[in-house]
Amino acid sequence: MAQWLNATVSETIHWTGNLFSIKAKTGPLPFIAGQFVRLAIDGPEGRIQRAYSLVNPPDSEYQEFLVSTVADGLLSPLLQQLTPGDTLGISQPATGFFILDEVPDGDNLWLIATGTGIGPYLSMLATAEPYQRFAHIILVHSVSNAADLTYKDLIASFVAKYPEQLHYQPIVTRETYPGALQDRIPKLINSQQLQQQCGQLLNPKSQVMLCGNPQMITDTKALLEGMGLTKNLRRNPGNITVEQYWK
Image 1 (tube, rainbow, N blue to C red):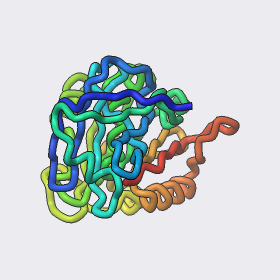
Image 2: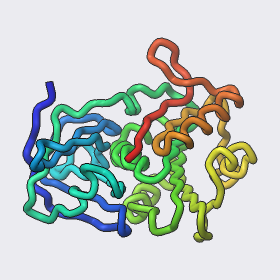
Image 3: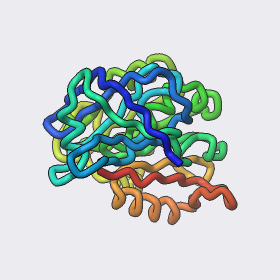
């Protein structure tokens, strides 16, 4: 049964009007990069809770979460209003199987996300494991507007540390942005434009992780399966590992 830790909010980073990150100091918590916890706020009608992936690496003193405010959501508007010193409930232990331990070896690793789905990848990329296991790692982040490209400085620091292994490819669908592609992920894969831009093959020797918009996951998974890749299951290891990460 989940236990609850009362954490103190230390910072809220507002990326846009409805996209923010919240940091809370807890001391190091045991979890595997890619896992999630539940965040909770006690309201007049009881505790409101939702699942969010951890953005920070496991050895951090602070737990960090990337949140998109849902206008009619019960929790996200309340999270956005938190200020330093406020209390935030964090469930323990962390859980989830969207982790590199569950991903077989491959020639390269594609980390494909839309929106806040980039969160668990940032936790993974802050650890040594992906760089020890894969010769090439491609981080693909698709958003509607350039302002939604979060954590650019953090990602740049990862690329600077592992320039021969890590490639970051932004996609901005509703406006032009330097270095970004401008179309839906399945179309960019189908046309080979994504692979050409990143300088990497995407084939049955690849490992692909998909996180974000359910429609992106459904469409991209179907396309990849048509290219000979298979869903990764414990009983039947394959190439495609997915996480439904929405709201």
